[in-house]
Length: 198
Length: 115
Image 1 (spheres, rainbow over the protein chains, first blue to last red):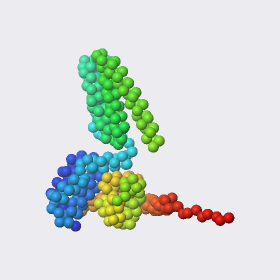
Image 2: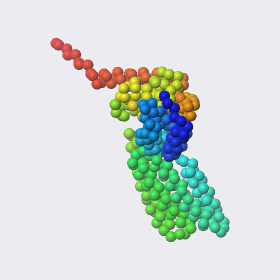
Image 3: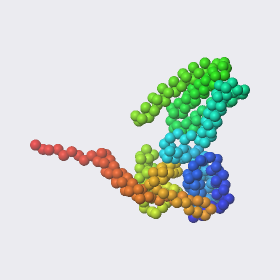
Image 4: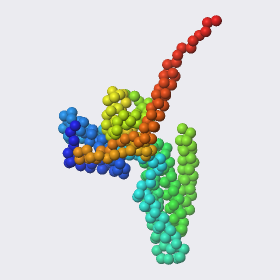
């Protein structure tokens, strides 16, 4: 069997990088698999560009990402929180705690630190967490529930943040957020019960 | 080619069984062997193969070994002692299941008594 040259492997690696795989162990498998598929075609007398094109048509970026997703589900059995989500969550907690303490001590800039923390929690941490969950969920119901959950928590966090700063619409945002979260919990609960039954 | 629904439940057993036949195998080799041996009636796609191999590795039923092949790295999978035991158990379970299915799908005619 013909073995691929260095440049050809590099080219395949570059194309594979588009899938942004985080599981390096799986990347080794996929790279070797793709190389084997191409080599098999070369042995049949195909030209390299045609062989590579055909293989990537069979195994596109989305398929490769789906393999990683399936692998993560099978091996981890839990929602995978990405590093960026953890970092934004930590930053939001630090900012909000600092802002709250500063506010209690009537220090200058407290409102600004608190507000940045609230926005970071809403449009950073909560949003990234929703994206992670959205990718983790395989059913449409689960995906819809994750979006509803985000909307509810976003309104609630913003309302809570605005309330402390005595900004307008704080109570309205909290009420809307609370109601949406109530819908989310009911929906999520019935959905999980259905999953358990099935 | 058999439907995915039929094949899905047996993939783990198939992989364990094939790994038990050789010292070690890599992913593409496994998929090709299944395709050839079953005359393409069972196709082990990448999307089904690698998640299961990684799950088997996590469950310590297989171990991996990295080797250089030309200019790239290849990961070989081999059964552990637990994997060998599991392969035997799963094979027996599957064969029993097939026998049970046969009984279910091809029932013997009930003998009628003549009084």
